[in-house]
Amino acid sequence: MKFIRNIIKPQDKEDEEFYVALKKLLGFRPKNINYYKTAFIHRSIKVLDENGNPINYERMEFLGDAMLGSVIAAFLFKTVPDGNEGYLTQMRSKIVSRNQLNTLGKELDLIRFVKSTISKNRMGQNIYGNIFEALIGAIYLDRGYRYCEKFIDKRVINAFVDIPSLENKITSYKGLIIEWCQKTKKNLEFQTYEDSGNENIRHYSVKLVIDGKVISKGRSTSKKKAEEIASKRIYFVYQDEIKNML
Amino acid sequence: MKFIRNIIKPQDKEDEEFYVALKKLLGFRPKNINYYKTAFIHRSIKVLDENGNPINYERMEFLGDAMLGSVIAAFLFKTVPDGNEGYLTQMRSKIVSRNQLNTLGKELDLIRFVKSTISKNRMGQNIYGNIFEALIGAIYLDRGYRYCEKFIDKRVINAFVDIPSLENKITSYKGLIIEWCQKTKKNLEFQTYEDSGNENIRHYSVKLVIDGKVISKGRSTSKKKAEEIASKRIYFVYQDEIKNML
Image (cartoon, rainbow over all chains, first blue to last red; front, side):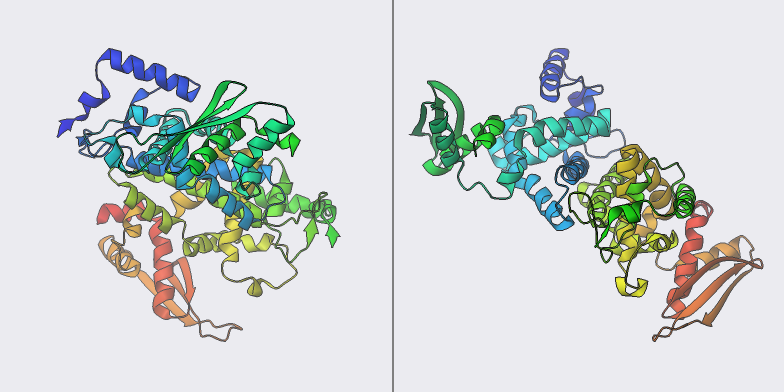
């Protein structure tokens, strides 16, 4: 087993790059960069602290999950004054679902920071959501609850949480985007193509082009799913406009 | 349905008494007493706010549950550096179990504040834990996360959380108290008597007397359980001394 110091204090250049990327991601200056390093250490890297305890993101994931739970609870409590506790519980489950957290982790490309001795494909789908939660745990340890709230507000609530869509009032994001483009006289095009790469299962990618510009992308195992993903991403960018139209 | 104003602004004298009792319970001055009032309104009192939403403790319970979850998560993370995420999850479940929260609610005699149109016996056992969580929700709304932390630290963590006992390393609190009294040459007496009151099921009460003074009490459906409850309470008062002895 390597000793943690090797991981925690690598070349200054690597630290510097990590710090810069982290600051951009977080939107504030990290105080103690070591917390964030731990948040991205996969258990396959068998490092121990000076007391012999393993260092990896798993304990931080537990912490971040709890912080996420309470921040989202407070958000829902304040935002939906007519929702009873059953509704609030259900909405929270949807917001912090594995699926949603994995999407968030992917959007932020957190995997680029992960230190692991196994390949990223072998870490499973949930790695994205897990390290997203670990990152929240690191923020809590580094800067406290207020910064957790701010980060979650920016990266989860503003970016992804949309009560009507969580209530399943939106059945097709693609349909919605088409409607919005028609009403606002925008030229919309879905450029869909096969994009299986090295994978065994067939995959499709789609570029969603509005007025000649690529606005979002999606990739999945079916054309329909890929288009829905790309449309949903657009939806979150323009939700205020789109909701006004509805 | 009555309108909320009747509940929120009763006689000044009642408000005054509630404020004083609350301040003692919380250990700090409440800023907005209305949050705490809501935390003790049972749904049988059908009151609505100005937007027609029902006012009772249930939404606050949801909020308090989330705050409790994250405060306990952070406490465990910091206190048990060698516990993995499975251990931390399990310990948290034990600390915030229904049973434990009901005990806490009872210890603090929160039921005295509850406004309800049905009798307290008909509200079920979980009313104690539910209003305890609602109280935490009210603290969050009134004074923010830091005060939640302080309150939970004082009322939950310091009063009840003991890692060895949660790990089931202690099988009998009575045995432990007997051992402690023998080693420290204290005179210990269990005064156990039937105490069924108006209840249909037989109940027992016990007074735990050390050196002639009643130190704690317990009440349950068996002598053994009542003695264990009284012993556990003593344990939490003297845990530092007792752990030194072990």
